[in-house]
Image 1 (spheres, one colour):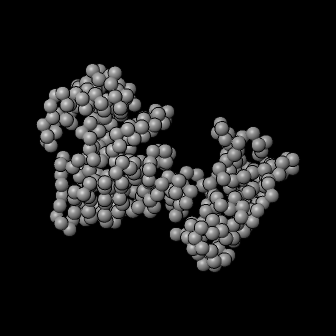
Image 2 (image 1 turned 30 degrees about the horizontal axis):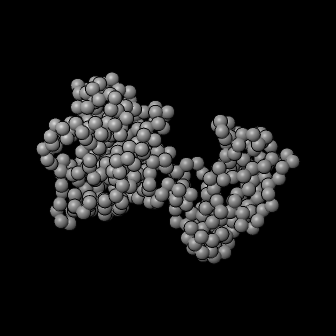
Image 3 (image 1 turned 135 degrees about the vertical axis):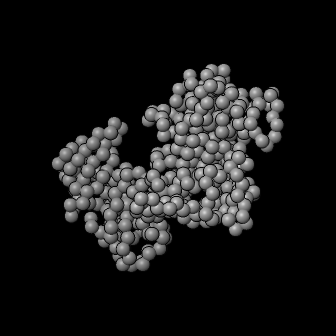
Amino acid sequence: MLLVENLIKQFDAVAGEPAGGVFDVSFEIAPGEFFTLLGPSGCGKTTTLRCVAGLEYPDSGRIVLAGAELFSSAAGVGVPSYDRDIGMVFQSYAIWPHMSVFENAAYPLRVSNRARIGRDEITRRVDRILEIAGLIQYRNRSATQLSGGQQQRLALARALVREPKLLLLDEPLSNLDAKLREQMRSELKRIQRETGVTSIYVTHDQSEAMSLSDRVAVLDQGRIVQVGTPEQIYELPRSEFVANFIGRTNLFRGRVEQAVSAGGLAPVSSEIGTVRCRFSAAMAAGQELSFIVRPENVELVRNGGGRALPPSEPSCGNLLEGRVTGRTYLGEIAEYTVNLAGSRCLIARARPDLGIGLGDSVTVRLPAERVIAICE
C-alpha cells in the first residue's frame, strides 16, 4: 500500500544545535497493516510522517501510495497534501467548537474536491463512521460537550469518513490521562480493524507501540535501526539502543568463547561470569558483544528457603549467586535489585509472595534461551 524509499529531509543546525531530520529512511507497508514509527523525541518519526502527508517536502527519495507516486526527487513529482488520499489525526484534537459532532465528521465530505457527494450519501457515511467510533448517540451534540476521549474518537472519525487509502496518526493519545489512554488504545485498535484502513502511528511510548502495532520501526537519530513485529523488537533487539529503549532490560558485556551459528547457544565470558547466550547471528570465537536478559525472565530463589531451582540442563543453565539490595512492590509483581559478583546489579521481576526480602542471599538463574546476544 505504501512504499517509502531512501527518504532524506534534513534541517539546518540552529543556534549550535545539531542538524535534524531523516536520513535514508526506507520501509514498506502492506494493505490493512498498522505500522508504528517509534523512537525518542527528535529521532525523525514525525518528520517522516509529515513527508508522507505532504506537509513537508523531502530533499530526496520516493513515496508511492497504492501504485501512485506522491513524491519522487528523480522524476520531479510532488503531489500537494490536499490531493493525497490520506487522512490524518494530529496530537491536538482540532475539533471545531462551533459545529456539532455530525458536522465535524461531515466536514471533509462537504469540502471534498474529488467528487460532489450528495446529502443522503454524506448522512449514510457519517452515521456509519460515528457508529464505529461509538459516537452515534452524540451526533447532534455540540463537540465541546464531549469528553477528551470522545473528542479524540471524533477526530479519528473525521479522518476516516473520506475512506482514505492511508491514515496517519501523530501521537494522538498524548493529551489523555493514563487510564483514558489505555482505554483509547483498545478503541483505536478496534476501529482500525473494523475499517481495515492502512495506518501509520507515531509515538515515543513503547507500550502503545507494542499493544497496537502489526509491525514497529524503531528510529534513532533520523535512521531506522530495526523493523519487526512487537515480539521480534522486544525479544530479539539488534542493538543496545533498541534493547534499552524497548522496555526494561539487564545489559552486560562479554566475549564469545567459541564460534557459533545463527540460532545457536554458546558460552560468553562476561563481567558476571560465564553465561550461555542465544545468538541471532553467527559469530566467531573471541568476538566482543553485549547480551541482555529481561527482568521477567530472571528466576530467583532465596538460599536456605527450603525451595531449590530445578536441576539445570546445559541449555538453560547460568546459575549465579547474589544478594537482594532493593525491592519495589508493584502490585501483581515485585521488582528486585540483586547485587552479583563484581558489584554488578541485576533487575528481576517476580511474584511478590516469594518470601524474598532485603539482604537475602539468592540464587539467580538466567535461562540461556532468554539471554540474547546482541550481534550488531
